[in-house]
Length: 302
Image (cartoon, rainbow, N blue to C red; front, side, top):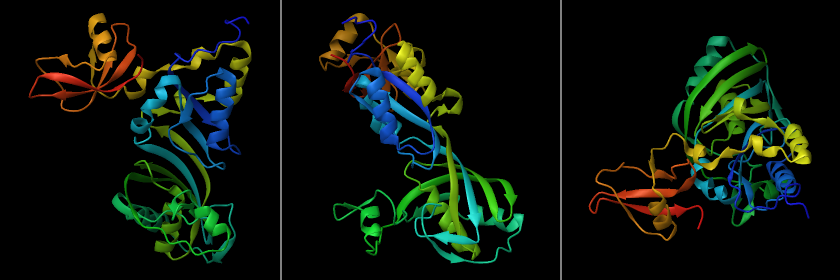
Protein backbone atom coordinates (compact mmCIF):
# COMPACT_ATOMS: atom_id res chain seq x y z
CA UNK A 1 0.00 0.00 0.00
CA UNK A 2 1.27 3.46 -0.93
CA UNK A 3 1.09 5.37 2.38
CA UNK A 4 1.11 8.70 0.58
CA UNK A 5 -2.06 7.80 -1.31
CA UNK A 6 -3.67 5.98 1.59
CA UNK A 7 -2.76 7.82 4.75
CA UNK A 8 -3.94 6.04 7.88
CA UNK A 9 -2.33 8.15 10.55
CA UNK A 10 -3.94 8.36 13.94
CA UNK A 11 -1.41 10.99 15.03
CA UNK A 12 -3.04 13.53 12.70
CA UNK A 13 -4.90 15.99 14.87
CA UNK A 14 -6.84 19.09 13.99
CA UNK A 15 -10.12 20.73 13.07
CA UNK A 16 -12.18 20.71 9.86
CA UNK A 17 -14.81 23.42 9.55
CA UNK A 18 -17.59 22.21 7.27
CA UNK A 19 -20.39 24.25 5.76
CA UNK A 20 -23.00 21.56 6.37
CA UNK A 21 -25.52 21.25 3.56
CA UNK A 22 -29.27 21.06 4.12
CA UNK A 23 -30.58 17.50 4.11
CA UNK A 24 -27.73 15.76 5.93
CA UNK A 25 -27.45 14.96 9.60
CA UNK A 26 -24.36 16.12 11.47
CA UNK A 27 -23.49 12.46 12.03
CA UNK A 28 -23.59 11.76 8.30
CA UNK A 29 -21.11 14.59 7.71
CA UNK A 30 -18.76 13.09 10.32
CA UNK A 31 -19.09 9.69 8.62
CA UNK A 32 -18.06 11.25 5.30
CA UNK A 33 -15.01 12.76 6.98
CA UNK A 34 -14.05 9.47 8.64
CA UNK A 35 -14.32 7.73 5.29
CA UNK A 36 -12.41 10.41 3.40
CA UNK A 37 -9.57 10.88 5.89
CA UNK A 38 -9.46 7.18 6.90
CA UNK A 39 -9.27 8.39 10.50
CA UNK A 40 -11.84 6.78 12.79
CA UNK A 41 -11.47 9.30 15.60
CA UNK A 42 -13.64 12.18 14.47
CA UNK A 43 -16.63 13.97 15.95
CA UNK A 44 -18.59 17.20 15.74
CA UNK A 45 -18.98 19.72 18.55
CA UNK A 46 -22.65 20.64 18.22
CA UNK A 47 -25.50 19.08 16.26
CA UNK A 48 -27.17 20.92 13.42
CA UNK A 49 -30.62 19.64 12.41
CA UNK A 50 -30.86 18.10 8.92
CA UNK A 51 -32.89 21.12 7.74
CA UNK A 52 -30.18 23.51 8.97
CA UNK A 53 -26.94 24.48 7.24
CA UNK A 54 -23.74 26.26 8.16
CA UNK A 55 -20.75 25.97 10.44
CA UNK A 56 -20.14 22.44 11.73
CA UNK A 57 -16.90 22.03 13.69
CA UNK A 58 -15.44 18.54 13.23
CA UNK A 59 -12.50 17.42 15.37
CA UNK A 60 -10.14 14.86 13.90
CA UNK A 61 -7.71 12.53 15.70
CA UNK A 62 -6.59 13.32 19.27
CA UNK A 63 -8.24 16.76 18.91
CA UNK A 64 -11.60 15.06 19.65
CA UNK A 65 -10.64 15.42 23.31
CA UNK A 66 -11.22 19.16 22.93
CA UNK A 67 -14.90 18.54 22.28
CA UNK A 68 -16.19 19.40 25.77
CA UNK A 69 -14.52 22.82 25.60
CA UNK A 70 -15.41 23.75 22.01
CA UNK A 71 -19.00 22.49 22.19
CA UNK A 72 -19.63 24.79 25.17
CA UNK A 73 -18.75 27.92 23.19
CA UNK A 74 -21.26 30.47 21.89
CA UNK A 75 -23.12 30.07 18.61
CA UNK A 76 -24.55 32.49 16.06
CA UNK A 77 -27.38 31.81 13.61
CA UNK A 78 -29.45 33.42 10.90
CA UNK A 79 -32.99 32.26 11.56
CA UNK A 80 -35.98 32.50 9.24
CA UNK A 81 -39.23 32.66 11.19
CA UNK A 82 -42.80 32.59 9.88
CA UNK A 83 -45.49 34.21 12.01
CA UNK A 84 -49.17 33.30 11.91
CA UNK A 85 -48.76 29.52 12.18
CA UNK A 86 -47.31 27.07 14.65
CA UNK A 87 -46.32 23.43 14.32
CA UNK A 88 -45.83 20.54 16.72
CA UNK A 89 -42.09 20.38 15.94
CA UNK A 90 -41.62 24.19 16.03
CA UNK A 91 -40.25 24.02 12.47
CA UNK A 92 -41.44 23.29 8.93
CA UNK A 93 -41.17 19.53 9.35
CA UNK A 94 -44.16 19.27 11.66
CA UNK A 95 -47.91 19.43 11.43
CA UNK A 96 -49.59 22.82 11.67
CA UNK A 97 -51.36 23.02 15.04
CA UNK A 98 -52.73 26.55 14.83
CA UNK A 99 -53.12 29.57 12.57
CA UNK A 100 -53.80 33.24 13.23
CA UNK A 101 -53.86 36.60 11.48
CA UNK A 102 -50.60 38.52 11.69
CA UNK A 103 -51.06 42.11 12.72
CA UNK A 104 -47.56 42.80 13.96
CA UNK A 105 -45.52 45.91 13.21
CA UNK A 106 -41.74 46.09 12.90
CA UNK A 107 -41.60 47.86 16.27
CA UNK A 108 -43.76 45.21 17.96
CA UNK A 109 -41.65 42.41 16.55
CA UNK A 110 -38.38 44.10 17.58
CA UNK A 111 -39.80 44.71 21.04
CA UNK A 112 -40.89 41.09 21.31
CA UNK A 113 -37.42 39.86 20.44
CA UNK A 114 -35.92 42.01 23.20
CA UNK A 115 -37.96 40.06 25.76
CA UNK A 116 -35.78 37.01 25.10
CA UNK A 117 -32.38 38.71 25.40
CA UNK A 118 -30.37 37.88 28.50
CA UNK A 119 -30.25 34.88 30.81
CA UNK A 120 -33.57 33.10 30.39
CA UNK A 121 -35.21 29.75 31.05
CA UNK A 122 -36.09 27.88 27.88
CA UNK A 123 -38.13 24.70 27.41
CA UNK A 124 -36.66 22.51 24.62
CA UNK A 125 -39.01 21.45 21.78
CA UNK A 126 -40.95 18.21 22.34
CA UNK A 127 -39.33 16.89 19.16
CA UNK A 128 -35.73 17.10 20.38
CA UNK A 129 -32.90 14.77 21.39
CA UNK A 130 -33.34 15.59 25.07
CA UNK A 131 -33.76 12.36 27.03
CA UNK A 132 -36.79 11.65 29.20
CA UNK A 133 -36.46 8.57 31.41
CA UNK A 134 -33.73 7.22 29.14
CA UNK A 135 -35.60 7.85 25.88
CA UNK A 136 -35.28 10.66 23.33
CA UNK A 137 -38.12 13.15 23.55
CA UNK A 138 -38.71 12.92 19.78
CA UNK A 139 -39.28 9.16 20.03
CA UNK A 140 -41.96 9.68 22.67
CA UNK A 141 -43.53 12.57 20.74
CA UNK A 142 -43.74 10.49 17.55
CA UNK A 143 -45.64 7.82 19.46
CA UNK A 144 -48.17 10.43 20.48
CA UNK A 145 -47.06 10.51 24.10
CA UNK A 146 -47.18 13.84 25.92
CA UNK A 147 -43.67 15.14 26.49
CA UNK A 148 -42.98 17.47 29.40
CA UNK A 149 -39.45 18.83 29.41
CA UNK A 150 -37.83 20.85 32.16
CA UNK A 151 -36.76 24.41 31.34
CA UNK A 152 -33.04 25.05 30.94
CA UNK A 153 -31.04 28.16 31.72
CA UNK A 154 -29.56 29.66 28.53
CA UNK A 155 -28.04 32.98 27.53
CA UNK A 156 -29.22 34.97 24.54
CA UNK A 157 -26.71 37.73 23.91
CA UNK A 158 -28.56 39.44 21.06
CA UNK A 159 -31.57 39.05 18.76
CA UNK A 160 -31.40 41.46 15.84
CA UNK A 161 -34.25 41.76 13.35
CA UNK A 162 -32.60 41.84 9.93
CA UNK A 163 -35.68 41.68 7.71
CA UNK A 164 -39.45 41.88 8.20
CA UNK A 165 -41.83 41.23 5.32
CA UNK A 166 -44.98 39.98 7.05
CA UNK A 167 -45.38 37.14 7.87
CA UNK A 168 -41.66 36.31 7.36
CA UNK A 169 -38.82 37.56 9.56
CA UNK A 170 -35.06 37.06 9.41
CA UNK A 171 -33.30 37.27 12.78
CA UNK A 172 -29.63 37.21 13.75
CA UNK A 173 -29.31 35.09 16.90
CA UNK A 174 -26.23 35.16 19.16
CA UNK A 175 -26.64 32.68 21.99
CA UNK A 176 -25.03 30.24 24.37
CA UNK A 177 -24.54 26.59 23.59
CA UNK A 178 -27.66 24.53 24.26
CA UNK A 179 -30.08 27.13 22.92
CA UNK A 180 -32.91 25.84 20.73
CA UNK A 181 -33.65 28.45 18.07
CA UNK A 182 -36.86 26.53 17.28
CA UNK A 183 -38.03 27.21 20.82
CA UNK A 184 -37.15 30.89 20.47
CA UNK A 185 -39.34 31.04 17.35
CA UNK A 186 -42.20 29.24 19.11
CA UNK A 187 -41.98 31.38 22.24
CA UNK A 188 -41.87 34.56 20.15
CA UNK A 189 -45.09 33.50 18.42
CA UNK A 190 -46.75 32.83 21.76
CA UNK A 191 -45.68 36.23 23.10
CA UNK A 192 -47.03 38.04 20.03
CA UNK A 193 -50.23 35.99 20.15
CA UNK A 194 -50.11 34.81 16.54
CA UNK A 195 -47.91 31.72 16.66
CA UNK A 196 -44.62 31.22 14.80
CA UNK A 197 -42.27 28.50 13.64
CA UNK A 198 -38.76 28.20 12.25
CA UNK A 199 -38.63 27.88 8.46
CA UNK A 200 -34.87 28.02 7.98
CA UNK A 201 -31.66 28.05 10.01
CA UNK A 202 -28.05 28.73 9.09
CA UNK A 203 -25.28 28.65 11.69
CA UNK A 204 -22.90 31.48 10.89
CA UNK A 205 -20.51 31.07 13.82
CA UNK A 206 -19.47 28.42 16.33
CA UNK A 207 -16.95 29.57 18.92
CA UNK A 208 -14.24 31.42 17.03
CA UNK A 209 -15.05 29.75 13.68
CA UNK A 210 -17.24 31.48 11.10
CA UNK A 211 -18.51 30.72 7.61
CA UNK A 212 -15.28 32.27 6.29
CA UNK A 213 -13.40 29.36 7.87
CA UNK A 214 -15.81 26.77 6.45
CA UNK A 215 -15.37 24.53 3.43
CA UNK A 216 -18.24 22.93 1.55
CA UNK A 217 -18.56 19.17 1.95
CA UNK A 218 -18.32 18.79 -1.83
CA UNK A 219 -14.91 20.52 -1.86
CA UNK A 220 -13.73 18.31 0.99
CA UNK A 221 -14.87 15.18 -0.83
CA UNK A 222 -12.93 16.27 -3.91
CA UNK A 223 -9.87 16.90 -1.72
CA UNK A 224 -10.21 13.41 -0.21
CA UNK A 225 -9.99 11.96 -3.73
CA UNK A 226 -6.76 13.84 -4.48
CA UNK A 227 -5.38 13.44 -0.93
CA UNK A 228 -5.13 17.22 -0.60
CA UNK A 229 -7.58 17.60 2.27
CA UNK A 230 -4.77 18.55 4.69
CA UNK A 231 -4.93 22.09 3.31
CA UNK A 232 -8.26 22.50 5.11
CA UNK A 233 -7.07 21.06 8.44
CA UNK A 234 -6.73 23.72 11.14
CA UNK A 235 -4.15 22.92 13.87
CA UNK A 236 -5.70 21.80 17.14
CA UNK A 237 -3.92 24.62 19.01
CA UNK A 238 -5.96 27.18 17.05
CA UNK A 239 -9.28 25.66 18.12
CA UNK A 240 -9.01 27.45 21.46
CA UNK A 241 -7.02 30.44 20.25
CA UNK A 242 -8.87 32.79 22.60
CA UNK A 243 -7.32 30.90 25.55
CA UNK A 244 -4.01 32.01 27.05
CA UNK A 245 -1.08 29.76 26.23
CA UNK A 246 2.31 28.80 27.60
CA UNK A 247 5.18 27.58 25.44
CA UNK A 248 7.07 24.51 26.61
CA UNK A 249 10.69 23.58 26.00
CA UNK A 250 11.43 20.11 24.60
CA UNK A 251 12.24 18.89 28.11
CA UNK A 252 8.98 20.29 29.47
CA UNK A 253 7.01 18.66 26.65
CA UNK A 254 8.40 15.28 27.67
CA UNK A 255 7.55 16.01 31.31
CA UNK A 256 3.94 16.92 30.46
CA UNK A 257 3.58 13.74 28.40
CA UNK A 258 4.28 11.82 31.60
CA UNK A 259 1.83 13.90 33.64
CA UNK A 260 4.48 15.93 35.46
CA UNK A 261 3.96 19.50 36.64
CA UNK A 262 5.73 22.47 35.09
CA UNK A 263 7.09 25.15 37.47
CA UNK A 264 6.32 28.80 36.63
CA UNK A 265 6.74 31.82 38.91
CA UNK A 266 3.59 33.41 37.55
CA UNK A 267 0.56 31.87 35.92
CA UNK A 268 -2.88 32.56 34.49
CA UNK A 269 -6.01 32.12 36.58
CA UNK A 270 -7.83 29.91 34.09
CA UNK A 271 -6.86 26.81 32.16
CA UNK A 272 -4.30 27.43 29.42
CA UNK A 273 -3.07 25.76 26.26
CA UNK A 274 0.39 24.24 26.51
CA UNK A 275 2.12 24.32 23.13
CA UNK A 276 5.50 23.32 21.74
CA UNK A 277 7.97 25.85 20.36
CA UNK A 278 6.64 24.81 16.92
CA UNK A 279 3.08 25.71 17.93
CA UNK A 280 1.73 22.16 18.36
CA UNK A 281 -0.83 21.58 21.09
CA UNK A 282 0.54 19.41 23.91
CA UNK A 283 -2.29 19.69 26.40
CA UNK A 284 -4.45 21.81 28.65
CA UNK A 285 -3.01 22.85 32.01
CA UNK A 286 -4.21 24.52 35.19
CA UNK A 287 -2.11 26.77 37.42
CA UNK A 288 -1.55 25.94 41.08
CA UNK A 289 -0.64 29.32 42.66
CA UNK A 290 0.30 27.76 45.98
CA UNK A 291 3.06 25.61 44.49
CA UNK A 292 3.66 27.89 41.48
CA UNK A 293 3.23 25.01 39.04
CA UNK A 294 1.09 24.10 36.04
CA UNK A 295 -0.77 20.81 36.44
CA UNK A 296 -1.63 18.86 33.22
CA UNK A 297 -5.39 18.35 32.98
CA UNK A 298 -5.57 16.88 29.48
CA UNK A 299 -2.65 15.66 27.38
CA UNK A 300 -3.08 15.19 23.64
CA UNK A 301 -0.23 12.92 22.72
CA UNK A 302 2.07 10.54 24.56
